[in-house]
Length: 68
Image 1 (tube, helix red, strand yellow):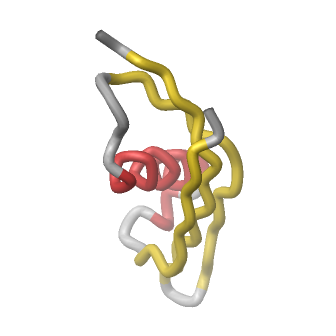
Image 2 (cartoon, rainbow, N blue to C red; image 1 turned 90 degrees about the horizontal axis):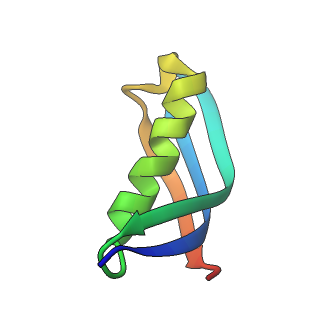
């Protein structure tokens, strides 16, 4: 059975002296509570979608908390 949860996520990615951040909600639909790594990966996909140059960057900071 699929459940829906909303997470507040902050992720900062750095690559070659440049950085990009995502700070906002992520909605997850799946079975049970997702691993934090899946929530961070969703935020990373959002960052790379708008900043392809960050695809090979390093995550230097991350924070997640479940809203609902």
